[in-house]
Image 1 (cartoon, one colour):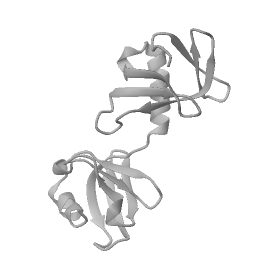
Image 2: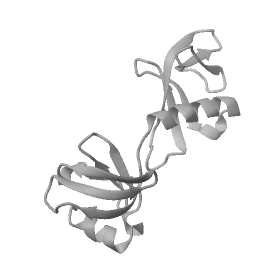
Image 3: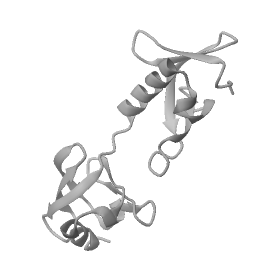
Length: 157
């Protein structure tokens, strides 16, 4: 594993991250990965190679120099797409599959819930909902939802 203080990051002609160690070895197609993307998104990051091997462990992104941090954050943002549900406006049916009409942090959308098993508890308050297209939606704190949203959600839990 490479020491976090002894590497450089750059982008190749295709926009992929390239990690260069102090020994001069280059690793093309490096991918940043959060250890706990939902419960602790600001702590614990790995830079892994194209084969899934960890090259660098980073406790906090703030530990990195600004130019490296910006590159890692940009790659994470492009990879992680988990809209957060702020309100459940309506559901087509209380039987599955059902269409949910929701308001997320990215705007209004619909999702199709195939079955109750597609709602996963992450913590006592947080839920991850997978729709029929494989998109995951996050409810960070179901207690913070409005009464109507909680009532609809409770029918599926």
